[in-house]
Length: 216
Ligand code: DX5
Ligand code: ZN
Image 1 (cartoon, protein in one colour):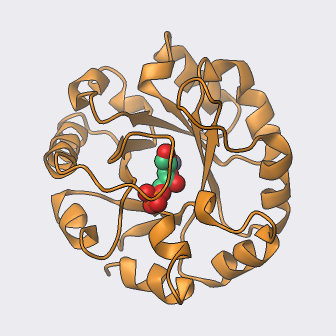
Image 2 (image 1 turned 180 degrees about the horizontal axis):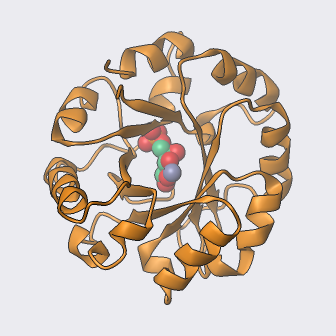
Image 3 (image 1 turned 30 degrees about the vertical axis):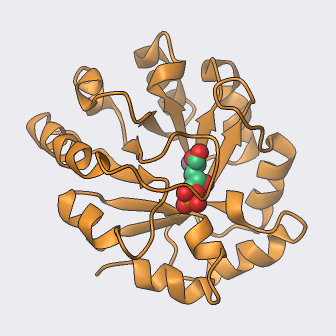
């Protein structure tokens, strides 16, 4: 399987989202990564349902919705209605993570779990079989444009081991600071999916940058 690329629309042009989505539709991107921030779980606020619905109207690719919000279980069916294909919740934001994962799947979405840089992979050993995506935060969530934390490589290898030992079908995603200096090393460590925002949208030719990140 070639690497999956999920450009993060957080670094797109919010006054001209349709243009960015059209570019992604025509590109080698596999999914579109959508960051929802509540100003409580992370020290930033991004956008909510109206913007997600607008993206859904234009997007021909699946939407991975990354919830950086407290108590995400309150909004599962609303995110389904707004167009999420995969709903990613944070381990650190869920008191009853198993329940939340089941509720996401009952709504007909794929279930993802994201972990912050300080959270170890071993916190997931009881639920890794139930999820479709394990998203390793390679920066502290809240902002695009940060530098990837070095410990990410070891964590990615540990995630890959855990998934194989558990016979889980989950893919391993990496989110934050991904660029062409680290993409190959992340893939060698076991990453299946790379989220990239500022590196793609800040480049001269985002379509080409997406193809370049996709190691075949
Ligand atoms: C960070 C977000 C990321 C972010 C990635 O909180 O979850 O998805 O948009 O952006 P870059 O690639 O710029 O680090
Ligand atoms: Zn994200």
